[in-house]
Image (cartoon, rainbow, N blue to C red):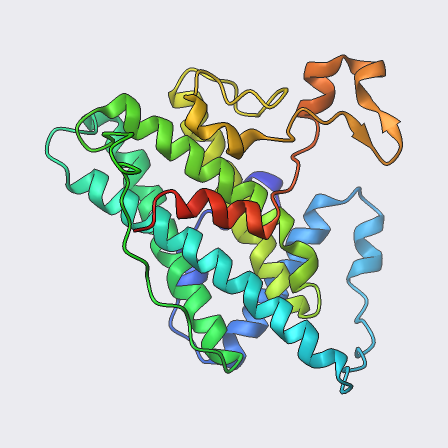
Length: 271
């Protein structure tokens, strides 16, 4: 699979919304996940990944309850973030004369993705025997601090903050969904889509498509928690700043957001 076609597939909301049975959905996700992994590794190693894996042993001990709780808690957090983004873009697109016509197509596509992610997460939680959390009531002014639906620049500022939060939050929850490989694959695919959203919105604000030194790029101080920790240059015991400089070293890796930090950021916009 060509890597460019792969990236297009990752952004295709049909992947998350096609009406199929649960078994077909799991099969499609598993099949696509294998193709994605093979496309991302050097030639030769991919052949190893096409060999059927042995069945994994299911944990039937008391640890299974812990893993399920960690898994579903992570999905509930992701759902809150997707609810937030989904409603934000819906309101932005509905606001008269807010988004320039040249940019509307971008946010219409992003909005479709966010809606698909909400549906996917709700269905996944239901399939795991857990009731999806209800959508919160949002205040996108953050108690009067922003005017995103009358000022396009502020709309872009919050769009960037929400997308950057989502990217870091999904990465931060990867360890909590590892107990279910199918969900892990899907979550990482959504993470990839969110990263493309973030890069696009950042460029629309004349920023680089990535974060350097915990600097969001002309962002208000209220968004500082979104970028806290992104200045880290130490990776696996190696200081990337030594070889590449602090800016490039910090930009080489996205830092995670803990669940509590992601919740704190989202709570600023929840009534």
